[in-house]
Amino acid sequence: MYFTDRGIEELEARRGDEEVALAWVAEQLRIFVDLHPEFEIPIERLATWLARLDDEDD
Image 1 (tube, rainbow, N blue to C red):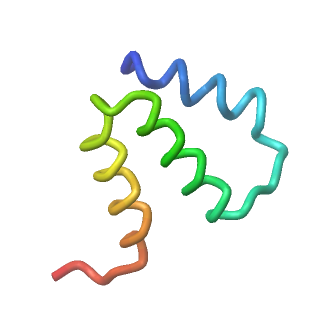
Image 2 (tube, rainbow, N blue to C red):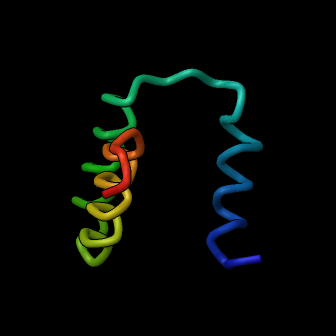
């Protein structure tokens, strides 16, 4: 198990039954990056990956 799995598991346990809009998630990511600019690149990569999930593989 990766260290990040604990955070993902906590997120699922605390908020797994909630429905949220992606606009809300995007805003939370912006706030997080404003508070923790050192994570800008990983957050950008995650957001890009999520945005492109439906793209066909080249």
